[in-house]
Image 1 (cartoon, rainbow, N blue to C red):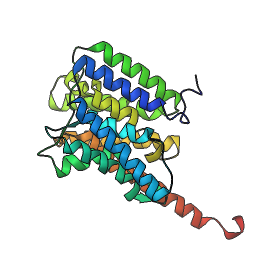
Image 2: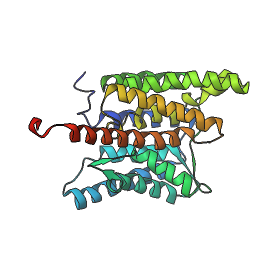
Image 3: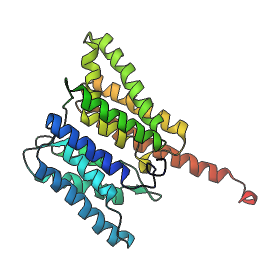
Image 4: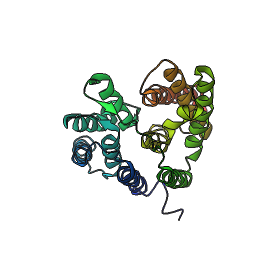
Length: 267
């Protein structure tokens, strides 16, 4: 079981994210449309394969691009087809353009969605559906997602963020005089499931140390709280967009500083 659910298995996350799509769509109709989602997936895979071949001289495994494409297909809302294709293309290209010391700084789907919301906000929105009274689909997805993330050794990231979100939800409820359940409700939806299980746990765009990962997850929740208090609609996306790359840049700076302080004789 442990070998089956590991970071070395490229099919674990794609299968799980497909499960979120199927459960969410069959029980609540979360997709804008199946053709738009398929377009997002196809463009993401095509751009990944082309750029990988041109820039890295090899054919890349499409699992990562599939995750990006299906995330775009689930999260983007638009009456037109082109935002789905463009969001997928921007997401994948960000991995190759916005790089420093061999690492891309933003989670691809998070970057693409933020870019589309900022540049084409009149044409693009994001999924905001909660499960409502459909409790069982939510419980199944959260239980399975928690098991997978735990097996991948990244549950501390998800757990920290969720705990901080609940605490901040209680604070917002007390400050604004709103019902607690209305503040907690967003985290029950498919958008947050993708966010907490895939975006903030992305191995390629998280810092290395376990303590640092916990600190970054807490910082993302804190930034989201600040943005929510300022009536920012898509607070979680923007919070990760700001905090995630900042943490990576800080880690790179500290690494470079340590290397400069190592005596030449020690190297």
